[in-house]
Length: 120
Image (cartoon, rainbow, N blue to C red; front, side, top):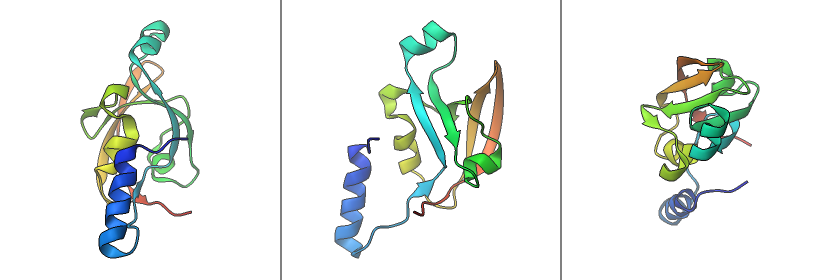
């Protein structure tokens, strides 16, 4: 598990200015990024391969399932070289409604998801 440095920097900056951490948007998936080579070898698109959609999460409620590949997040291609999913989620706010393009068993689906606040 790794947290991109930009997310850490944003959180520290918010803490310095407000004295608290601001809620971060939560999608609710465990995923592994599929890079260009892996995509070519397996005849699948690049994107975020969903390992698990957390029960009761925005992702699960929207119909995202294990083995789905999230290929676009609000119109932005999900690729390792442009920061992956953590990077695009970090640009959103709690309550934002985002559009996800999902590849499932050779078909493309479009789902709308409302991001919630991350809670432990």
